[in-house]
Image (tube, rainbow, N blue to C red; front, side, top):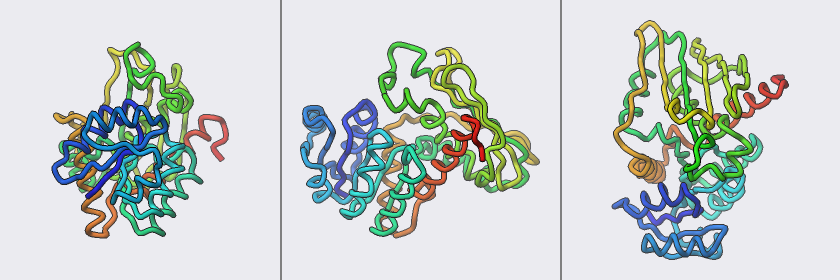
Amino acid sequence: MRIGLLGTGPWAQMAHAPALSEHPALDFAGVWGRRPEAAKELAERHGTRSYDDVDALFADVDAVAVALPPAIQAELAPRAARAGCHLLLDKPLAPTVQQGRAVVEAVREAGVASVVFFTTRFQPEAEAWIAEQAGRAGWFTARAQWLGSVFSGDDSPFADSPWRQESGALWDVGPHALSVLLPVLGDVRRVAAAARGPRDTVHLVLDHTGGASSTLTLSLTAPRAAAGVAVELRGEAGVALLPDSAQGVVPALMRAADALSAAAHSGQPHSCDAAFGLRVTEILASADLALNGDAG
């Protein structure tokens, strides 16, 4: 599969470009970015070419991987789909439900495959754990904590990200928590409660279709010593804790590329496709309304 990369920022540099260039079954065909000089530099570093015209890149590849802010991804993904490109997307799918629906509609109309890169879902230990817990009935409640220190220190490459500064933890790490909880506990019927904590920290209580409730604590401003991820399930089967992963983001992204290739060849949608990404966006939007006192 010939694949191109959209984006040249820290995430593209540390995750996407290495994963695409190291993957033995991918032909890393080129890079496009909003800053042509950055695209040229990143492309040269990984032995590929840069594109000044994004539509020219679409015409030359079978798929694109997107490492761009959500609003830019939501603008370019439908164009790529209409050009016949399969989509390896980032989370969140889009900053609004309307934009997310436009991506899903474009994917459906074009008949292309899509995978949204929820990192945890493509780590082997977590993938196996989620499948195991999803096969068990009787979950009563769950607790998920996704605590980052992006804005608490002075060395995070993402601290200057305008969309993270504006949208905070709900939209940045909230998708990760939902990607783990939804396949186990079922869809979210409603955001039962939402409250703000220190700085960008938010607390959510969710009511799931499977009968369980879950609580989420999300932050990008946690003290560095308190940062980390924890998911705990409690029910008739006892207590289950999300395992740590022994692999970093690059192998996980390579597995996501494998999932995209498999979906493209089989015609069967992946469980983390754009439609799932849209559902996550809808839940985040509902939580946003609840946090702003308009749960509706």
